[in-house]
Image (tube, rainbow, N blue to C red; front, side):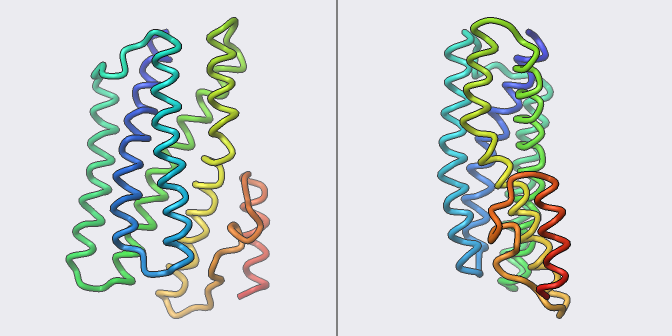
Length: 195
């Protein structure tokens, strides 16, 4: 249970940090469609914080426990927020938006990994613990899939636009409501035909 507890602590810290990341990213958003996407993800992330806190309650764990891994996750999240704040100070709104998009992708990469690992563990676990974990994963995983794949699409397209190349905005991942790696690969391939 020690490593499961560690994963849950890192998950909670990732979600709490995700709220700060999205709050800061919204201050950098220029594209209105992207702003709407991030507003939606911020609300979902706030709900995910409560979902993970609920796991601590149901499993009788301490959500305030500190571990070296949790501290590292907190430090990384704070670094992402600082990077966006630094980008905003640069005075180029589009550049700050791009930095924010990259920070969201980095945060969502850890977040997606956390939920994927918990889901795998829940498949192997037994009893009430397994049911509790499976229920939480079923509630959140589709949203986490959307967060990572759509965010990567936004980041790619904003970068292409910044390079003076044809960009597809909103990205095909969003238009197709991509929620898997295979769907994301297909959307990225199709975007070549769209651009």
